[in-house]
Length: 325
Image (cartoon, rainbow, N blue to C red):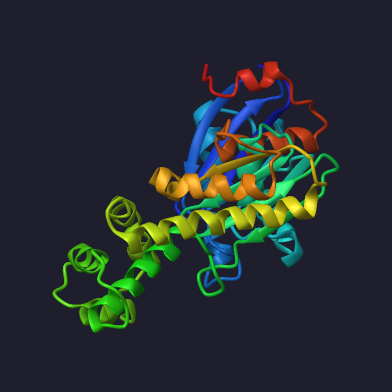
């Protein structure tokens, strides 16, 4: 086998995925690594180094490839915001083990959009534990809205929905708010007899934000019979649409068609969230086309490094992306 090879890396806080392919789109190996983390965090650089090195080694070992054949590496990494100088840090990490001619490095949301839209312009809205909207137009101009973390928002995210449910349960418990089935649901979820026990957990040393985001399926289920739960889910859909609209208004002209790709676990909550999301978008921007993501984010990182290397994204190349030899 001869020719240049390319690696795409999608580094998130849950796991890191990697793909090795040639310039024609033939997938040679899929791999994985340890989770990434924000480089500003405690031991952030060390954790990202371990994640990237393990993800690269995973595909290299699987395909038995000489590192000298790697012409380009695309990395979509959590917290890799270019404006914070992260690009130089990650470039240094990859050059410890490879010497590619081409590098593409950006925040993980850029890889999400590249995969969702197959390298074309559009807007992706991600709603998992956190939330963010990111877009790019035909001129290559980028914009994002949200993604500021749980202290500054993450509106519409799993964290936000879970927190709203706990707050509504607390108000129902002490009489500040109306009765809601969210109260017994929250108590049952955490296995506590009173809301005060839940409060102790939230402020305790063993608390994690994932524990709050895990409430989303139960809130969505209750929303079909409980008005407060329904209001929370509907509001989440609207807030996620507002993030997308902020990006659309910045990148597009009135009347433009815009492809919007919703992704993340929150969007699996069903019509109770997706209908308000779509209605809000279309009410303000009738040219919105809500589409399903086409490829996983790791393939988005691969597409971006192809583009950075001057490789045209053709239907033939795209058609091979799901195939292993």
